Every structure is written in C-alpha cells, then in structure tokens.
Length: 297
View (cartoon, rainbow, N blue to C red):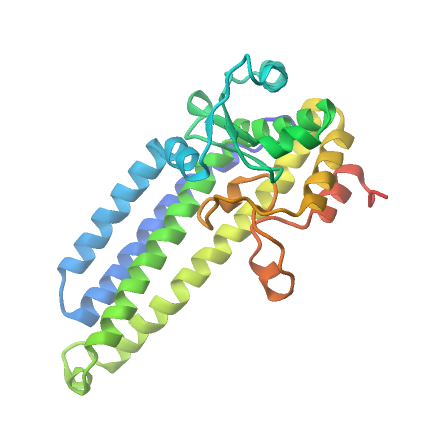
C-alpha cells in the first residue's frame, strides 16, 4: 500500500543518477570546450567547480533558498495555528519537526527545502495564511511534508545545480568564442568539426538540462499531492487550497527561476502561450482532477 515514503528510495536513486549524469555532462562539455580553446585546464576547472557546487548546494541548500525567498523564522506565539498544524502532521508522518518560516508576501504560496529530514524547512507566505481555512492549510502542509518524507529535495537540489552550472559554463564558452573568433581558427589543431560540436553542445546542453528539471518538477508535484492526500485522508482540503492559490494568480515579489520549482504552485505570473511549455508546475486543474478523480466545479 502506498505511504508517505513510497518514493523515498526511488528519489535517492534518482539523486545519485543525476549527480553521476551531471558530472559526466560537465566532463564532456569541459573536454569539448578545452579542445576548442586548446587549453586542457578548462576541463579541470569545470570538474572542480562542478564538485564544489554540488557540495555547497547540498549542505547549504536550506539557507540559500530561505535567503533568496526573503523568509524569516516564524515564532510559535505569532503563528500558533501554523505551528500546530505542522507539528500534528509531522507527528502523523513520523517526521522530525521542520523549521518553520514565514515569507512576508501577499501571494499565496509555500515551499519545503533542506538536504534531509533532520535539516528540513517549511515556509509559507502571509498571503497563504490569510486565504486558507485550517483543512486547506493542512492539505498544503501535508504536501510539503510529503516532499520532505519522499526526499524530493535531494532531486530538486541536484537538478538546480545541473541546470545552473551547465548554463553558466555554456554561456561563458559562447561569449568567449564569439568574442575571440578569427578566420585562422578554422585551421587550428582542433578542426572545424570539433568546434561545431562544441558550439552545438553549448547551445543545446542548457536547454536539455532545463527540460529535464521541468519534467522532474512536474512529476514531483503530482506525487506530493497524492502523498499529502494520504497523510490527511482528506484530498478535498488540498484540492480546495490549490483552487484558491490558482485563482489568486499573483506572482511572488522575490523569486528566481532557480527556486521556482520548490513552491507548491507556479510563483510567476501565467502569461499563457508558449511560456506554459516551460512551467515548473503542472496546471492546477490537472492536479485537482488527479486528487478528486474529477474536475472540481
């Protein structure tokens, strides 16, 4: 029978797979770029930076994300109802009590982060607390605790590192090659074919990495919705909360593309059109339908 931890082992395996894949991609790009530049040290620097970014993003992910979100610790006295909900659901889920943070923002949203269950963080916006009932808030918190219990944060952290570092590495290469390109380059020892391969890799690698991150993020939300419903035994609460969050449609004031996938709902304004292809979250209507087995009226 499915439980809150059904996907924990799977996510740990995915994390190691992504970390190994990340290093392979970085080594391949570093080798291509070093050959195109005729400088072997580029490969060594790429691998060193990849390892360092993996290390710091894993060990300090909660602190980094909290600061980026502009969140502050929530005191029990000021947010007693929120504390009660988190404590009760954490006990039910068999999880340590995560650190609780408040984001001073009128847009309703929430996220969970941290490298493991012992160093987890749950943050909610003031706007979320204002519009949700207790059962709806329980649904949202259960969703976030499901991310913690399933170790989703490991996968998402590695995905952020992969996308960010590959994009930076490719951007540096493209800018430097466009700046320094000369006709004589065609006759250098690298050869035209290798240079073309490096340029193509520099363009396509960040796009492929971003699409991988989006696919992981969208699937994570469906899984957390299902696990959260199992935890509360009341899927209507989360479905109703998602409906309210979706109708609000207000973007967060402090958010970046690197952390957008951590939130329970898309923290950016929905501009429609092609922008929906690159959304970090599945449509709210699809999530509600999955929870209730029908479209909510």
